[in-house]
Each structure stands twice: as structure tokens, then as C-alpha cells.
Length: 379
Image 1 (cartoon, rainbow, N blue to C red):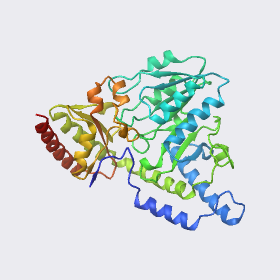
Image 2 (cartoon, rainbow, N blue to C red):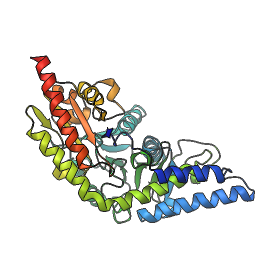
Image 3 (cartoon, rainbow, N blue to C red):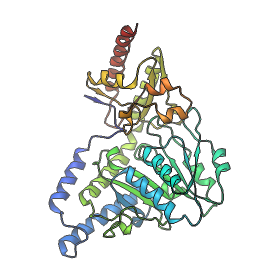
């Protein structure tokens, strides 16, 4: 099997699974319990929180465990909007955000907030001048995806932070689900107030994630109850998931030394696909993460390619896995100026550090054969 759908989800690392099983078996007490067994579980949870904070260069109290990227984005955006609505009702985001951001913005608009959606260029990157022009005294939040999940475009996070550095009333949220472990980011040295990532994107388990929140930022909680996670996310803590997440993050950050191999595979695929007739590559490698490639084959729908490759035991996706079953033209690609036909036919290859160049060569061979056979049928 060749698995090139790692932006949808990754295979859990064996060492991470081992850690999860060990903790779930031996530290199953509720961390909120008063007895000694519960206290031991609480100590382990706090140690994992501290470990994650140290790896990110932030404070332990700035780490909130969540169930993943969607919950983290909801908590960050709605939590901040409702907490600071007395300061202003204006929010800025982009046209190419994940549904867990885009749909939250739509809900906020229906509740009296005003949202500005920044355009992107043909490479999927926002215009900083448009951002500056959109800022007002009512702007309380900017929410921008660090790495786009469909084409891999990287936004100028450093420059965005510098743009609002002197605006104390404006906060900056980054959906970094696709960037963690793949794209370098010094959170502590950037003007980022909130940042989201999800464990199952870097070989941890589903149902685990983190929201980084600067200690001076206040959020209205989405889930009320027992007051866990410093009151921001009630519910019995997923201790084993949190410990396993810390382990996976350490391994992912250690793997960054293998980025050159990942880039080699990505560049090989980009070159070979671009060389094939009637192919359009939507990923611009000069502004993209090292693991995502998006392209279209003229005259063929994306799901046709996905299922044809599946028969060869090769797995890719049609752009975002969250919306792939809807069979709609990618809103990200349309925002980049791609035609409806190409946007509907787009597919995504997403790599992990476990992939090898030999797999990429087999993929290209099979893709060429599939396209040739499909073209014969069309003719």
C-alpha cells in the first residue's frame, strides 16, 4: 500500500500507541479525583502539558488540551469573539480557511459580528496591504490558516503579527493543523495569541489536540461543566491521549531533520506531474509546505482519479477530506482563480516522513497509466 493522504489523517506511530496503551492501562484514574491514584494521573497530565509547552517555547498554562483542530478553532474564534465583543465586532479571515473556521465565521455573522474575507493570489497567499486596509478600531480578531490544507500555501505569519503588533485590541489566531512538525514556527517569538493543532495529523491519535492560548487572552468556554483545562474545556481529561500527543509531537519535531527527504519527494512529484500532458499543478513550491501537492487532470473528475488509484492500492484524496464527499468545486482553488472544471477535478497528494521516493516513482507510473486509459475511454 502507498498512503499519500496524510493531510486527512496519519497512521499512529507504534511508539505513540504503546505509550497510549500503557497510560490507559496503568493510569486510568480521573485526574480530578482527590485520592492518591487521581493525583498521580494529574501529575502525569501536568507533565505532558509542560513537555508540550517546552517544545513549543511557551508556558504550561498556555496549553489547553482539546479533541482536535475543529474544536480548537471553534473555541479560539467563538471564545474570543464572545469574550471581547464589548471591544468591537469586526473579524478578519481569508477566503481559503478550513470549514471549522469558515462556518464559525458564518455563525458569528448571523449573531451580529462583521467579518472581512481577504482574497488570495494565484498561489493561495493573502495580500498584506489588503489586510492593513481592512483593520479598524473595531477589529478584535484576525484568524488566518498557517498552511492551507488543500494546496499547502504558507501564509506570512511573521508579517501578519508585525502588522498588528501595536494594536493591543486585536488578537491573532492561527490554524496550524497542517503545519505542525512540517513548517518551522517560533510561537514565543511571534505575535500569535492563539494557535490550533491536531494530533492525528502527526501520527498521534484521533480525538487529541492542543489550543495554545497566551495567558493574557480570555476565552468564553464552549463546553461548561467541571471546569477542567483551567475552565476553558470542561470534561474528564483524556490523559492517555494527552500523554501520547506529547510523545508524537516530540517525534514529529525530531523528524524535521528529515525535511530534505520530504522536499525531495515533493519536488520529484511536482516535476513529473507538471511534465505530464493536460495536467495543471496548483501548488507553488516556493510558497508551499513540503508535504502537500494539489493538481488537476484535464477532463477528469477528482473522485475518478482517487478511485482508479485506489484499485492500485494507492491512496490520495480530492482536496479537503472534510468536504470531499460533497463533490463540490474546491472553494480554495476557486478563490485562487482556478476554473470550476479544474477545481472540481483537483486531487491532493499529502506526504509524511514515513513516505519514500520509491513510492513516489510507483505513484507516477500508475498515474500515467490511469490517465492514458481514461483518455482512451473519453476519445
